[in-house]
Every structure is written in structure tokens, then in C-alpha cells.
Image 1 (spheres, helix red, strand yellow):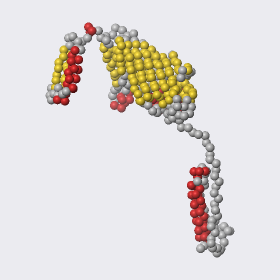
Image 2 (cartoon, rainbow, N blue to C red):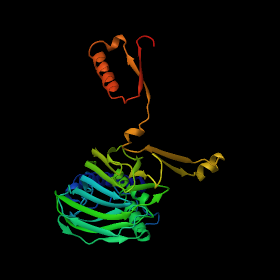
Image 3 (cartoon, rainbow, N blue to C red):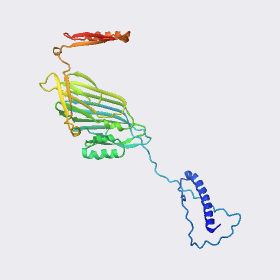
Image 4 (tube, helix red, strand yellow):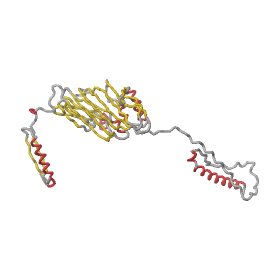
Length: 378
């Protein structure tokens, strides 16, 4: 065996023993949490090394490799604890709005819950509606009046974008260009609720006889969890007769209590809102007719470029007066279609007869009606 072969053989045995020792140390690494140096490459000795001499007989038994000292365990690295905070959830969100001749007073009652076991500090922010000129503002946090800051659109822009960059609530990008209400909330106790009430006044815009109201609710669509209780109540009052009432965003219940007053109700539970709350209503102009007519148009420049068509949209609101005088009720012809097929046997046909009887008894004087029944054919 040449010197080179013996050297390679000895290095191979040393490498095998070192590898075994490393495996043992790796098995204890989780206990000591220390760092290890793992040898991944071995280099051969230089050719002109003076220590390379003629081969000598190797005594038997061959000496084993020198034991590799085990590294002393390093003390664990103590780092400050990093808490993963769960965001606050909204348990109750109630909004009451009173609109009197374009002046809207909005009262908000929100209850938040802190699911964490640590005390938190935060900023309450509220995107101001577009065009809102708030002249009165009050804020109450658990019974204490809190100072708040009204920020214009330029100052609010940075706060909106910073929140989005931290991967929280991307829906706030919708409000870039609008103002903001900001208030510091501290402390938010662990596993407890924090109630915030907010009241502000704004002047609504009248566009061609149509008055619109908007409430920023869409920012909740990216929030965590669902709102357990969501309720809206809007009371409309006007010196002029209220004609059309329309909500393009939510299915509201409309209750008219007179020609100049109406109440809108929207309630839902365990919901994650995905759009702002909008309502539009029109009033009768001085000297106007019995039917309220209002037209809203929207030009679509983007659609015109794509389709070479001026394009656009329009919305026509038409509503008669409520209630109409008895002398102005128009006589009408009513046709009732009654299903008399075999599937209506029993309780169904009895219910249909009672419904028709009710309708006939509630016709006005001068109305005419006809009954058309059908089974297998009309």
C-alpha cells in the first residue's frame, strides 16, 4: 500500500468516525439549541510535504482514531417574546340616521371585542363620506368623551396606504382621496368589549332633485370574522312631499308614515358587508305634479373608447304621491288568473279562493275585474 493509499485510507476512517460523532451531536441539538459546524469537504495533503516518508510497517492492532471532543453546549438564546395578536372583532354595529331637509345627523354605536389575553392599544379610524362637511362631532368611549382628529384627504392618504401595506384591510384603498376621523383608543383590556359611540352632522348634496346619503361600510368586507348584529335605521323628513326612495346597495324596508316622512330599516346578523350603504330619495318640487320624476345619467368614457360608442347609463325614478287623495284614484281593470288544475285540490284551492275574495272586496268603486281560470289549458 503506497503512502497516498494509506493516507486516503486513514482519512476515510477519520471521516467515518467524524460523521458518526456529528450524527450523535445532531441528535442532541434540539436539547442544547446550539450551533454545529458540519464538515462537507476534505482536502488531500500537499505533494511536497516533508512529513511524507517511506512506508513503515503498521503495528497490529491499528490504533483507532482520536476521539473528537464533543462541543460544549451553548446556552439557549433568550429572545423577547413575539405575540401574534388576533384582530378585534365587531359584535354590534348600529347606525341611526335622521335626515331633515338635506341635513343628516348620523349616530353610530359599535362594540368591539378583544380576543387576546393581553392589553392592546389602537387607533380608531373612520373614513369620512365623500363631500361630507362635518360641523359637529362627538365621540364617546365607554362613557368618556375622547378627543379626536379630523384629517383632510392628503393627510389621510398616507394612513390609508400604510395600513394596506401592512396587509390589513385592503378595502381602505377605496377611501383614498377622502378625509378621515382618527382617535387613539387605550387601553383595550384583554378578553373584554370596548364600546364606541360617534355622532356627526353633514349637509347632503341635492343633484337634480335627488338627495343621496352614503355610509362607509365596505371596509368591513376584509375584516376578520362577521358582524354579529348589524342594524340601520334612517328617518327621512322633508317640508316637501317625499316621492321616490331607493337603495342600490341593500334591501331596505320602507315604511311611509305620511307624504313628508318615511322610515328605512335594514337589519342583518352574522354578516360581512361588502359594499357601502347608499340611499337616494327625491322630493316634489314646488308646483310639481302628482307623480315625482327624477333622472340621473352617467357617461361612460371608458366604454366609449372600447366600443366606439358614447354609451352610458341612466336611472329614472318615478313615484306617485303617498297617500293619494281619494278623488284622484284612477279606476282600473283587474284580471285574476286562478289555477284550478288537479294539483290545487284540497287546502290549496280553498286558500286561493280566500285570496281572490279578499282582493275583490278591496277593489274601489268603479273598478272592473275578470276571472280567468286554467287547468290543463286556459
